[in-house]
Length: 98
Image 1 (cartoon, rainbow, N blue to C red):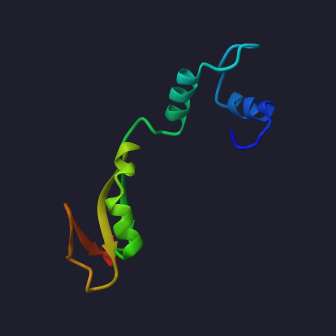
Image 2: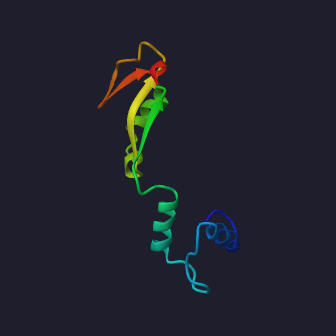
């Protein structure tokens, strides 16, 4: 994991219910599915990007979001030169309107 002792991870996981079998450990697919459920990764999340600069543009193009259930539904900025510009299927909106 991240350098934590196994007993610490077990204690943290126990806060969400019982996982695994005593003395046998965890079934990785079952544990992975349960963690995805706990973290809300099994559903889609509609998100918007505030800031249509270089970082905002990179975030909007990043395909990993869709793979993880995040759907970018809007881009907003306060710069009048950027408002109204098309970003593939999105149009940069006026930040003061949100």
